[in-house]
Length: 259
Image (tube, rainbow, N blue to C red; front, side, top):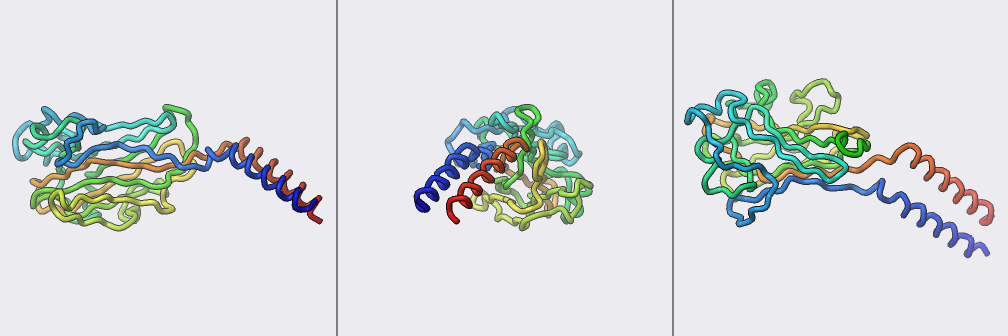
């Protein structure tokens, strides 16, 4: 009798867990691109064709000049947006040999030599998750990553993600994870990622920034080809209450028959 009752209780636990498993599983949404050596043509990055600086070698040195259009992906629950602030298309290299949708070919619009310079000058890339245009479900951000490679002696050498966990504006104290210093060229392609506790919990929208610095001059370029975010939908209070009610009932059954 005791053994049989315990098995029934465990079965009920499994049923309840199955009913609410979707609230605890993480979803992944990404913006796919490909390295320049790839023959793939169906990436989600924007069309690089006809994107050139207006005045030759120096146009991108002016913040906001020819900033790439944001790129989006939407899984029906949240929208992932990747955008640039104060970063311009690389002169003469943003069209031609690259396939449409393959990657961004951009360069810093500032000569930031340190992380603090980069933050003060405002040259960054931003990754945003937002559910308000879909279900408005609360979500917790589990991880984020950006894949890129650098080219040219003047390309930024250091890359690091930043999370404004206190919502008081970005500063050097908001840099998270380990700063990446990839080698130049496609062989130095690097994925910069973070999955720590600073990421937002129970929100409908939030952003993470990628700051870059360490360039000797504004004549190198950065190839960005992938952005990935992993998140978990937060159960609604009513759902949590129902789970708790089931849990209490299960404990009651076990205590009653297991004595």
